[in-house]
Image 1: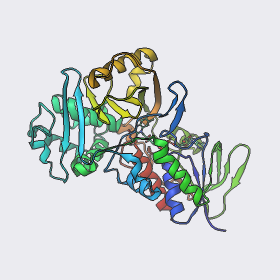
Image 2: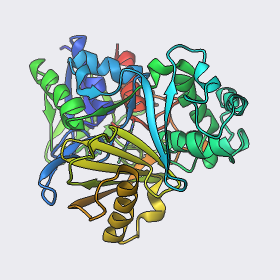
Image 3: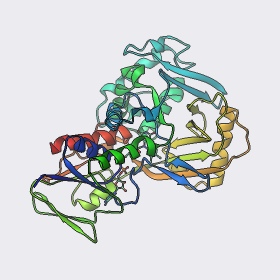
Image 4: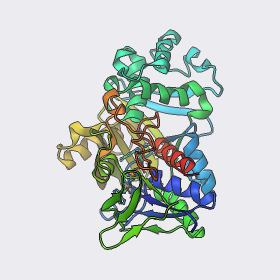
Length: 412
Ligand SMILES: Cc1cc2nc3c(=O)[nH]c(=O)nc-3n(C[C@H](O)[C@H](O)[C@H](O)COP(=O)(O)OP(=O)(O)OC[C@H]3O[C@@H](n4cnc5c(N)ncnc54)[C@H](O)[C@@H]3O)c2cc1C
């Protein structure tokens, strides 16, 4: 009988493994516990706002090559949009200064030598120590490798690393920060173009994958939660979904692409990250200001990023655990007052929604990073995928998609 690969979890890791395998003609079945695909990267209809929103604004950089390849396979590369050059506008709410970071194409960072392109208040020399992150040891925190004061930190390194690592940067893993810098700033402007799913994450990254799998007779079974794995010493024998079980054939393989806490519950003895950080998004039903950029970075504020969508303005706060107990309406008011100050939109609070994802990503400390397992397990036919596996990147779309592709390669 031909081999079947059972993929558990229809987040981006599971979907990317499924798409890669289906492309290669392998029979795949995806099993997803919830009634929707996409996991932590999804769109849904919000009844308060009366519109479709994403669970969180997701920023992808053009240098995220696995994400780009995934979209190309799906014919959906035009669903992420951004400027042709790496230009990111910022506003300092403390001083009301506005500036645009302009990173030149090519690997030589000419931009740091031009005051019109670099961060105001910084000198070219300030940027050189950042390179230390590129060679940082895996047990080091960012704060042990670079200095955490001054305009370069406040206005660039902090916003960038906070967004990428989803942890207060000084406590974050220097090796993970180094990987982010290597694949973005150090790779030049063409790797740093900020891309967003203008019409939502679902239509950009999830629905095209479901259509692709459907066309290749690769079912995605929603509401089909894996309850237990039955295994011998060396291999997984049976998948138990509660009401039904699947007995695996000799060549069948399982890719477990669930979050770490679900994986450790299913695979005894598996080591995985145990600490998490929250991300808080606010969505406001209002037309963006006439010249509002698609993405605006804020510093000296609670709000970190402001996104402009048709009929909606949305914001992101990373490592937002300190705000999990703040009353929702107080948070909405604080965030809106900052958005209004930065964009010139009216100060009256528009209809709003707040989405708090408590376990948005694993905590990207050196200690938690050291707990990330590789793709292989002690069972010959069980592979792991997920943004939390050992991809060398923080928990991001790129990490999830790369892990799925790696698991697919290992099946081959
Ligand atoms: C609010 C927010 C904002 C973010 N912003 C960004 C950003 O700007 N840029 C970026 O690159 N990344 C961002 N991320 C991170 C990104 O969303 C994740 O890294 C990525 O979606 C993880 O995908 P995954 O497939 O590894 O895991 P998940 O998306 O968690 O998928 C796992 C799937 O497994 C399913 N599952 C669990 N248990 C079982 C079971 N027993 N049986 C069957 N199925 C099961 C789950 O329901 C889920 O669908 C953000 C995340 C959040 C939450």
